[in-house]
Length: 377
Image (cartoon, rainbow, N blue to C red; front, side, top):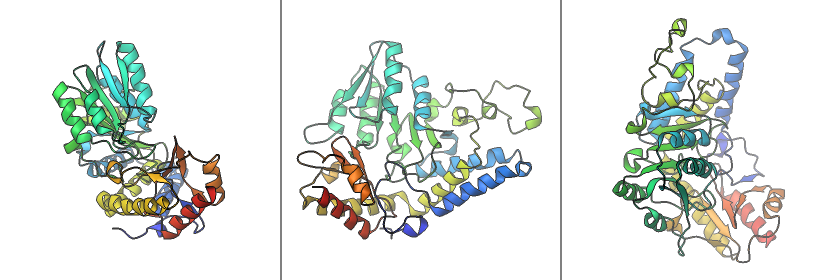
């Protein structure tokens, strides 16, 4: 269990921010890393060619440690949708084949597959949860010999319901299908091991549970996917691009590993140092410890919310850093705005009040949340 880390964030005491799944606040030292990057751009003559590579490689290695990958398997991307587009370009779908997804899955991990299936003459199958709230069993039942791939999260973005990706991977192996994981709502707060799950592609936008700025993210590509076709052909992804004097000696070969999939201008001298600072802090805390601490917090909230008549799904079926609370008669009108007026910040997703704390939250935040919910009833 980790102690409260509120001192690392610029959060006023009268703000109860329990909305990390929407967008995390930045830590103070992460913001300062971005400010230093801005100051650096003021003096561009101090930026050397090697600087276009060193920070990118360090960020690659930091994220690789987070998911138990090799640095060669990590690409730098600007958004989850970019990484998912890379996956869609490189995973074949044949006429009549299926892409298995979840009903109510985040749209970035749906639209690209709808388009890919349409072009190939396939179809997208959106699996609904079982009557007990479980997602894994219905997914396993939907995967068969017609399945080209499954495109899934580790936990559902609306309420944190878990998908047992290890079991899904085993079932996909039986039918020869691929696995694409959108880890935006899990990686950084929920342990993820690419050696165990073996995704063909894992994509993560960094502005939520990686505590990083907007417009930066990471993608893991399995070894058998690293010779694929990138979305774009930029100069830095080609072999020998470190030598600026010879960039016009055009190269057919790419930098090794998943670097061919890097977005152009990957060396972003403002966002990249910020993401690196955030990743170092997460690795220092340890993802297992983060998950245990947040699970205790959501367990505390669920127990106290039950006294108000609010319903939480079974703890065994959800990620510990997520809590979806449901009102028996549906959420009151304007609930999110009414809570925000009391300086309590959560999200309304579907019929759930989505509560997603982090290490900056304390017992006072929970008291303010419960008081605001009680007033809204």
